[in-house]
Amino acid sequence: MHSKIGKSIKRLGGFVTLLAVSATSVVTPAAAKNTTSIHPYEGKKYVYVTDYEDGISTYDKKGRIQDAYTFIPSSSNRAGGMGAVYKTESYLYYCDTNVGFSDTGYIWQVPVKKKTEKLNVKRQRRLFKVPKWQEFVKADDNKIIYQCDRTIMVYDKRTKKKKKLVKVKDNEKRILMAKTASGRTAKAGNCVYYTVRNIFRGTNDGLYQLNLKTGKKKKIASSVNTPWRLRSGQDYGKSNPIIGVNGKNVYLSTNDSLVRYNTKTGKAKKIVKNQDSSSAGTGKSLNACITANAGVNNIKTWDVMGMWFYKKKMYMEIRVKYNYKAQNDEEGTCNYDQKNMIISVNKKDGKKIRYEKGVSQFLAKPCGVYKDSDYDMIQNWVNHTGSMLTFTSEGVWIGEFMAGDGFNQYFVYDIKTGKQTTYSKRKAILILAKQGIDDDYQPLIC
Image (cartoon, rainbow, N blue to C red; front, side, top):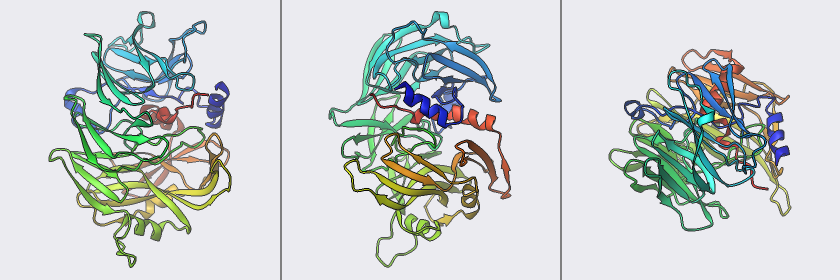
């Protein structure tokens, strides 16, 4: 298993310490109402990054490494090694279960010095055991909400008791937390979102809303798309729902349409169809816009990989797979090409479906095509464009591109001026750390 991790690190051009789920402080209650995702990856001064081996490193806001901490001594026989981390106001929590080695371990806490944000490793303390570990959902100084395969749990540090918020009885099903385009757990008010997926059939039960304050659950859609995604150069991917949160509205891609769910009224509305309802076609579907502007033939499928909001528009990053060729073998091996493009709609009613030519051409910036595959080389593809790293409130896109030599390059596109410039690798890597680059890094148990 160590060789697999080494392969992933090598393929990302040597950015070893930042290939990890990193951590941020819990926002204040006043600010929480305005956030669209949970921020477990950074404090006021530092970004905290696990190395998935024995500890973490901290980086300042300019991307410069500051300190390295060892939590698990090399002499320790603790199963699993260093796993995910989560920073609150007073503590850094971590799980010593690296899924690549074990799925059972312990949650630990390390005190954080409030003024300096330095960690007091000598005072770290083991809190409780977790089976079938998946990820932290949300935490503060007194409670830790986390997800295992088929449960979402809350642990109260004061009473030392656990409580199930969600439990799935079917052994063939697993919980998948919904993420925003940033890769972080999506949040609207006190609520997070998840689906329940059959791991053998690949189907899901729709999208659910979970109020973390009251524990109430509600099904808000009968289906939700869970596109498989894999960062260029990594071996393992995930299929969490990707949703958008803007004010009181939650947006999701379902089997037949784009849906806007109003969290205040509790009502869901289909605002854009995926496909035209008749063979004649109206041209008012996402598929019609994508097909007309992708610039390729033989489109096999497309997925919404991210949703961003700017003024009256919602922008969607669309991944298009084409030239799909399935091999006649038992493993189901396939080869295909893929590219990304940007489509926008009016965020209120879904009207004015538009192909965003400028930023789509920016994604096609000639950095060279890049061949990639999953670890078992069952899926093999050629990337013909870059992908979006983030989108700022000022209307600036930051794109990530994999050059032919396997090294990442970063560029900026200003939606207002159309100007393109290069972007600092150090700053880009810091963005990845804040987003939790290895939310997608879940090795299989071998």
